[in-house]
Amino acid sequence: MQTGRPPLARSVQVLFWDGVRAGLSVTAASQRAGISHETGRRWFGQAGGVIGNAPRLLSGRYLSLAEREEISRGLAAGDRPSAIARALGRPTSTITREIGRNGGPRAYRAVTAQRAARHRARRPKTAKLAADPALRAWVTDRLLDRWSPRQITATLEASFPDRPEMRVSHETIYQSLYVQGRGALRRELAACLRTGRAQRKPHAQARPGHSRIPGIVEISQRPPEADDRRVPGHWEGDLVLGRANKSAIGTLVERTTRFCMLLHLPDGHDAGRVRERMIEAIESMPGQLRRSLTWDRGTEMAQHAQITVATDMAIYFCDPHSPWQRGSNENTNGLLRQYFPKGTDLSVHTAEDLAAVAAQLNGRPRQTLGWLTPAQSLTRVLSGQSPVATTT
Image (cartoon, rainbow, N blue to C red; front, side):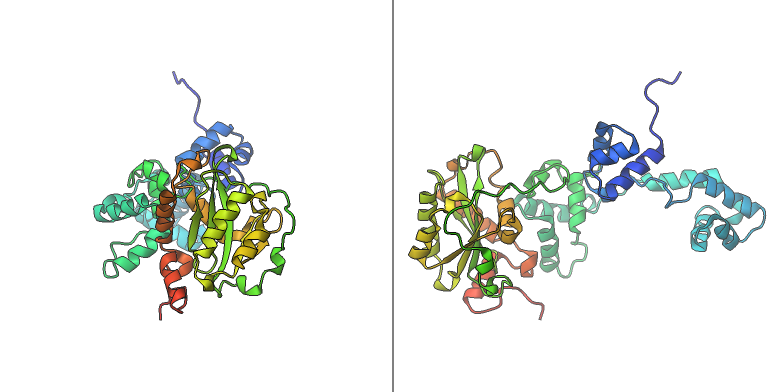
């Protein structure tokens, strides 16, 4: 006697994954398919949050058993593949391939063809990283250095120009980390990614903007040269906050080169302490890199006027709820969470710790810089060259 809950119909899985691919959340896609949120979350987790790794369900895109039975009857009646295709509303090439891969017109059987199609759909394939120890070791080392999969992919081509076997796409790296059953990379290496997550999730909402502070200069008044990033010396800044917002690290990112500096704030991040650390950091910059600074509306910058007087660097403030106006800084702050996780006490880190982290970030190749590192890009700027690598 059969016991337990009967398996869900394949059409239910098709409906769920179609919803996910259409942009619905897991909860909404589960409701659409008529399944529990727990079931939808389990299916999504088994795919590692990677939509492209959803199981290949034999939906309307693929021939059904009923269609294969029509093909079998048509062949028995002596119909040509083109006539069968017209009757089914399928391309002739689809029917021709179906017949050819299943023994030809004389040997074609609908049930056998359906069984073979299901087998192909779930056939496991050896991941490239699992099959190549040298490539896997190279990728693993860079992940441990907290490189992103895109950085790894781009640098592989430059490092091994004559070895095509030393190539792997960033998506393959993600799949090897996220998708159950791949096993090419150790699951715990996902903690080395920027997000540190064990599966992909939608981006979190940006945190609310801070209250207004007196005497701000709007970002709309910032020189146009800062917008196109061609002129170096325009910076973006913010705080990375620790547990209960009681500790913080200041961040400065140069818009053209993406070079970052970190401000040590072990004793607090009130306006006075931020002013002191900011003045020290700006005064350490070469003169040609002191053009402007863009910050959000945090009260830690309440003494921005004193900073400008001391350093002669203009300070501009973003519009409310507009973190994208400091896009480079937001990106860098996200990278910093690999080193300084949310909910931790940031005051325990020394100035030397921050310098080491900044050096590692500035040593990572960036796609937007033509796969130069920020440090290399800054060196090019200071020597009068273009900050971005070219192929000419």
